[in-house]
Structures are given as structure tokens and as C-alpha cells.
Length: 497
Image (tube, rainbow, N blue to C red):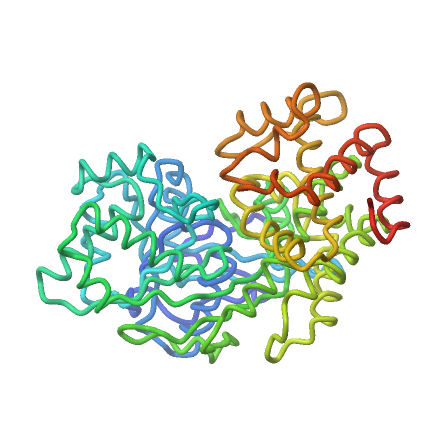
């Protein structure tokens, strides 16, 4: 049977085994603007919103804004499919579930028409601007927490406020319009993996506005809210096999389907300026304080991902489930969660941490998701300062165990050292790729602490004698004996040094 091209006109032809929207985009108002229409947004926030629209809500559709020039293919694909795409959920037993999502009822490509994107953000019907712009999109120095005005893109926005390129320039322009027209404020909802993401977003936005439009600061403080949120759903990069599986199993021809695991979670601080969707009807948890939940997720799941990503790559694996099937690496993950990260979390209301950790390992082990270690290891200079370094610092302060944390750092350094050599042909994807490679290799040839001295990543960690002693002993052993023997030694010894 020939596959059916996904678009609005062909929806009725799609097989009954696929859920399709019961609403028509023309019936739905765009109450939400979302910036960063990537795979994660489409497996998570857009999915929750689709559930809500199918329940009868009609004022909370999404206008997706593709902010970067690199987003052109995403825009063209969604535009050609009338905003529709297929969410393919891969169950651990191999079963595939497909659902056509229709909650992105509008889509704009900002680089071609920045004015249209600004006007949309300033539209009176828009109550929420949500963001998935990656950790690096918040443009701050993790070692100081200060906004990076030296970024050339920021300098461009300051000089060209009508033709911005970053989220900060767009928000400043939209806020100015709303203020000039006497319109109400709105909510900026960060959905990125940063602890206290709303607070970070607020601080960075205000830092930019105080520089570009100082008279706007008070209006933002009075009219715009920045709730914190915690998001979770493993969503790997779409590959051609996913498109093939969709055509074979469901006869759907989709230019950019999204693949994900069954698990999903969203915890949001209930602080919205102009109302919000009743997402609680779809399983979203609204709380007064998100911090315990995001701390749990970032320090266990995200840091655990990094552990399995680096160590698994050094053992020759390519996907996260391969790493988890290695008992020694799962043992390291358990030890890290039980002895180093877990004891710092405290009580998380409604969560049994033992069950949560077990569930994490089960999720990582799903062989059908195929989450690539290359994705997990990408942009680690943005991830490690947020996901891992706080755990190391707190354990150093209390004189606690740090060997698994030190192993993650040492494995990252070794991962960089070996990149491009025989058997290690993975590509390094990171905003500071050249610096990372230079310092990692220098740590093996000239200055043993060169890698730790990358201040934006590690701060002053190189000044900690305790950490340095543990780190240097691990990486030296790793270079000589390899990952398998290093993992065995760490698991056998309660303390490394």
C-alpha cells in the first residue's frame, strides 16, 4: 500500500490505528507562542497541548517560531504539512504507537520576517511565550551567572533592535510594543534543562533590557512572569529509519516525525500573568515550588545520561541502551545516584526516589528508542556545569564521595582526547569544541590540569586539592588501563584515593 503524504487534506485517509486531531486549526486561537520548534518541544509541550485541544479547548493553540537560520528545514517541513507531524512512541517491547499532532496551528520563520515574529509575540491574544532554546541559548557564564554581552549576536541585537537575531532582542521588541499599546503583560515559560530555569530566564532577559531599553525594566518586572518548570521525555534525533518505520507500519509519509519514549513528565510553578491552559487535565503537575523536582531530574537523569554517554562511548557503544546493558556501567550509575547525587536531594513531594532511580534505568534500557550517545555527549560544556558540577561542589563541602563525579569529568576529557582516532570516530558537537579539544589534549601532554582550568565550565574546581587528587588518579588510570578496568576498580573500591 502506498504511503499517504501527511497534510490537512489527507488526514481522513490515515489508518484508524493512528490517532488524529478532532479539531480543525481554523477553530483554534494561538494563545501560546513557542520559540524553538525542535523535536523535544514537539514530543512534550505540543503533545500535552494537543491532548488539551482534543478535549475541547480552543484558545490555547501554538504559534511556533523558528528563530534561527538553521531552523529553515523545520519551518519548510511543518509549513508543507500544515503544521502537522507524527509522534512515534517506541515502547520497550517493540510496539510502535503513532499519533498525529495538530497543536502547532501557525508557524513563522523569523529570519525572513523578524517584524512578523515580533508582532505575533506582541499580539493581545498571546498569553504565553514558551521556550526550548537549549541551555546555551540563555547566554550566561555558568561560572559567574552573568549575562554575556560580549556575544556578537547580542551586540548585533543591541545595534539593530528592529532586526534581532536572539530571543532577547525579540522579547525586548515585543515587550516595548505591548507597553506602548497599553496591553497586558504575559508569561515567559522556559522549558529547558536548567535548574530554576524561570529565574535564570528572568535574570538574563532583564540584564539585556536594562542595557538596550532601560525604561522598559519596570514594566517587565510588573507585568511579566517567569515560572520555573521541569520537563522530561527522552526524545532522540529523528533518523531515516524512523521515517521508514512510519511508512511501513502506518502508511504515513512524514518529512519530520518525532520519536520518543512512553514516559513523560511536566512540573510547572503556577505563576501565570494572564491565565494558562488547564494542562492539569492532561497530567501536568502545578506546584508552588518546582526546585525539588528539577533538581532531582537534572542531577539524576541528566547527569546520569552524561555518565553513560562518556563511559559508554569509551567502551565502543553508540546508544544509551547499549551502555545500560553493560553491568559495570549500570553499577557506576547506581553508585553515582545512590552515594553522590541522591543524598543531596532531600524530600521530593509525591516521588519515591528509589522507584524514580529504578525507573530511570528502565527508561535508559529501552532498546527501541535508540538514543545516540553522540546526542547525549553533545554541547557538554553547557550541560556539565548545570547537571554535574553542583553535586561535586556540595559533596566537597561536606567531605562526601566524589569519585563518580570525578570519573564523569575524567571520561569526558578522555572522550575528547580520543576523538577522531582509530576506533573513536565520533564527532564533537560543542560551541567551544576547539578549546575543549585543545585543553583535553594538553592535559595528556603538558599540563595535567589544563582541562580543569576551562573556567566557564569548571570555575575554580582546579583549586580543590581533594577533587584534583581524585580526578588525576582516575584519568591517569583510565589512560593506561581503559574504561573497562577503570569501572571495575571504582566498583570494587569504596574510595578511590
